[in-house]
Image (cartoon, rainbow, N blue to C red):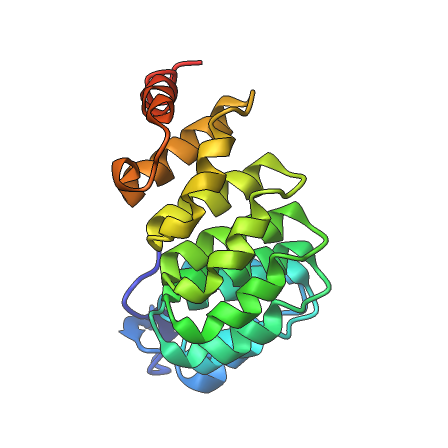
Length: 229
């Protein structure tokens, strides 16, 4: 939806002048004016439509907006910038009082893929919200820091199945072979999504090299082919 510039109306002041339409890049002052729209929905709509054109500093400033929807949208947009300068502001937003903002911040940090976010994301595995824990577990797998192995193994015992699935897949993504026995145990879960996540992770770990009991091999294949449950 975003355009290369903002449409502005100008007039030369002549009688009967219809005005001229020109496309110009908005100034920093105009960005600030728009993002300070007193209507939260107006700020959110403006951010969502033009996030890919907003200056980095404006997006960072929006992380402090009074409306959580705007803060969450800003966090998400920063995650798509690929700009390493966003790491510290997003880490700070992991402490936001709003669950949605924390979840978006956790996702954004994973999308940026910077190892500096590993420690804060590991802490986020203990968040009160399963949504934040799941996003943190998934992001740790994207970053690929082996230092997250033990925290992710612990997350396999989380009370929420989506967190457990995300942790399992992330263990596979980071190549945590020491997690194999925990993942094999997960193949016995009744919930198919957990079995599938464990099977996916074990395949990435090269299970045949780390799975000693022969009967576990057939169990792995059985669970891989039970994907239609």
